[in-house]
Length: 230
Image 1: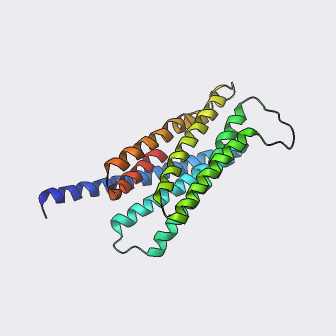
Image 2 (image 1 turned 120 degrees about the vertical axis):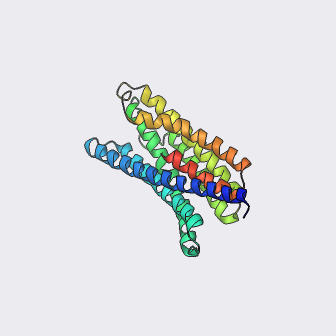
């Protein structure tokens, strides 16, 4: 083999090892964070914390699936086809769960610290109508991707998902910051990070997609998922 090609493969192998270690560390941090959040939930049973825990758990599952797929492509010589298909559908299922529990967590944490809003019994808040309309559009795009097998729907759903969650984080952050009780809440750090990280993941995805081959984009994307989840 030409020395340059061997060097390139060696460098790629090092990147794969780095990604694998990063994702394992990130998964450990997510599990530890979820455990601490659960202990806090036992002390202060705020309604939003249940959905926040489900949100963390969903991202931990997403990270685990992505890490397995990386391990399969790099280290398994003859991967089992059934397992590959199972994890592909499991990842889609986790996406749908995130679209459901994520908005509830963001909206409810904002309401927890905002001034109480009274509405007439039996009437649905316009806020929830907007939240579930956008969530339904994202789920519809996922269904179209499965039905037509066209990746463009997956791309649109990904960008819409991250834009949507960034706006939810900004909205919740403004409501928490505007409350005296919420100014020292640890959840503010999470909201700040979410408001910044979701737009950045879009920019990173666009840059990687247009500068790399599909195969290299996959490995770079798994690395980006590890950084994002961390």
